[in-house]
Image (cartoon, rainbow, N blue to C red):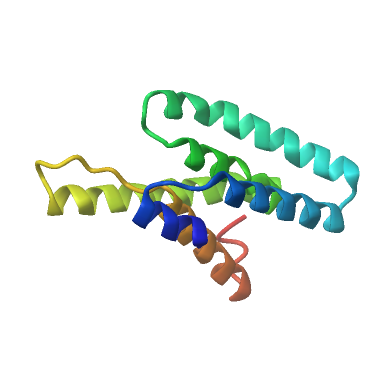
Length: 136
C-alpha cells in the first residue's frame, strides 16, 4: 500500500521500500519453507524481472514497478501467480480506460503500483472469504 501511495503522489517507488519488501518476503518464504524454497522463489523473481524488463525499456513500466512485480513470487505460491498477475493487469486496463475516458487527449499514465495493491488486496479478501478456487 505504501508503494502505491508513493507511486500515485510522488511518481516514484523508493529503492529502500523495495529492499524492505524483498527482505521481508525472503524471511517470510524461509519461515514457510526452507532455503531451497527461498532460492526457488528468488529464481522466479529474476524470471519475472527478465520478462518485464522489455516493458521497462519501452517506457510502459517504471523500474520500481518492475521491481515490485518481480517480488510477488516471494509471497504467493506458483499456482496463484499467473492469476494474480492477470488480475493486476486487468485492473490496470480498467484504470487506463477510465483515465482515457476522462482525459481523451491527455497521456494516460497509470501508476502501476496502484493496480498491484488493489489486486493483492482482492486476493487477500478472496482468500479470507474462502474463494481460493477463484484465485488458484
